[in-house]
Image 1 (spheres, one colour):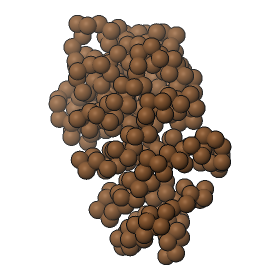
Image 2 (image 1 turned 90 degrees about the horizontal axis):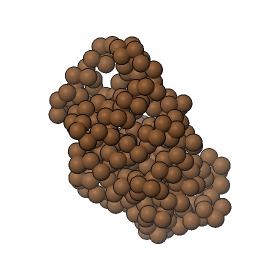
Image 3 (image 1 turned 180 degrees about the vertical axis):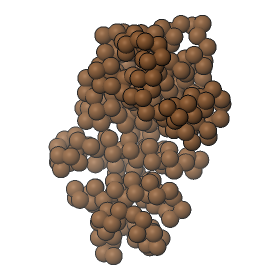
Image 4 (image 1 turned 120 degrees about the horizontal axis):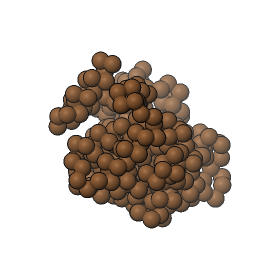
Length: 302
């Protein structure tokens, strides 16, 4: 209850650091609290949140609270799957067009939470996106937004939309989504957290091939070609720096190690660059995943 109170107080101000510091409330606890205080079941609360989002007279703060409440509710699989039946997807997706950056970010967060490990909701989102262009808007937010919080939440949504979804991957490719990853990794203004999100998106895109241990399918080979042609591997190599955050480094090394395990062939130039990067990281190897780092070193014979 104390954490919920701290979270609630932080949401009432405009201090983003304070909001990040308190983190997100436990979804179940928040949903239970809303139900206890208001004496309403989940479908009723979802309808009321949707009505707030749809109402043009709702204030930004009211919409923010509605989105936070909605996300807490739809982290429940059944509630997420009811978004289509209750015709609530349009109200959420419309918030991607809101001028308020935080509302855009929370709309992305809602979408990401609804589709996470949920094929039915993934398809429901894609169906509604076909009418609203939401997929394209999320890609644009991830690539062009000047607000890092919005970009981070957009990447979170993209990762969950595309994971294990051939249909979503096809749309991602049609919308030139691959260009987003090297763009973010090369962006000097992007924080390590944002680069980590970009790497997480890449992990989602190749998750099917990794889990089936098979890049030899037509789609698997197309993805390998993307990694080469779009200079994505080069972009990952470039961020292997000892001053980089440990989570970002570990994620980058994990992806490279995964590719190595599946027979990815580095060019001589890439090997030379990797050799230099490994030397720079050697002093912090105890903080990195031992197996992945060892796999990385095997490429250059170290």
